[in-house]
Image (cartoon, rainbow, N blue to C red):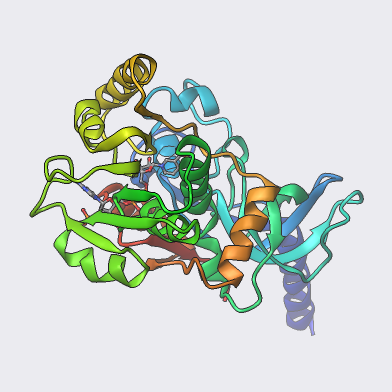
Length: 347
Ligand SMILES: NC(=O)c1ccc[n+]([C@@H]2O[C@H](COP(=O)([O-])OP(=O)(O)OC[C@H]3O[C@@H](n4cnc5c(N)ncnc54)[C@H](OP(=O)(O)O)[C@@H]3O)[C@@H](O)[C@H]2O)c1
């Protein structure tokens, strides 16, 4: 009798804890993926204009490991100089609406959604996350949560790099450097959706995959240098950030634009900013770093349309569990992902 009562009390305590607590990946100091812990933390409570999402899947991005390591040092201006203010990571999310704030009009409990948590509020590497309703859209019905979680940051970056920085136009010749990565696979498909002729630059092992997502031409960077083969492009979208400004300039048509999304070293980043600005000011070719992609509802809905039309199909490389996030980030940091690295949180 006493034992039964104890068990009932324990169950009741656990149930209450489930209501108020959740598991999340957290970090309390800057460092390698070794400092990440799977901890029990307070479940977030949605503000009036927020939605509480039960996370089914998330995906990892370069921003996660830059913020985790606090490198380059500029990353610490986003999240604290000495130690991280926001101890959670994860921007991309797909899941089910658990609760809504009282001013939320676009979603209700049970809706399947996907979207992107802004950089200063990351937290999708957890069982639950709160997001402003403007950060979310209904998940395309035919997509899995994992597919949907693989999309937002990569697609925002590709779309805003190609369209806003790159001024992409119908019929142009577009080259995507780093065509096999998370951002690159989105860029190849989005550039095709804009009606352009796309050349993808990738290594031998990824040629078939990049062709399968629609690239018209392939350049295997282990065999050929796209800046030295005499070809010229109206738009270069660089998702690697390993080429000099003069190399990119050579590969552009006389009024061509090079939008650089990635960087390999800090000195290369400054090289692109400074020399790119010089080239852009003194000639008709434009070369420059794109801004950090800005999540917004209009672009999310545009991307959703591309997903529903089958014009963008997410490429998923590997799947990890929430507990395996350190391993997932270690893999991403190696810089050879073949599409996106997804975290499966709930099934
Ligand atoms: N501005 C923004 O808002 C923003 C947002 C997201 C990401 N980014 C930046 O964009 C870059 C790409 O991100 P990501 O998520 O796509 O990275 P990722 O998924 O790790 O992809 C890296 C890809 O680059 C390829 N690669 C490596 N060296 C190459 C080379 N020399 N030539 C051509 N391809 C090469 C790799 O293919 P192989 O294995 O075949 O080498 C791999 O597929 C990162 O620098 C990231 O910081 C910027």
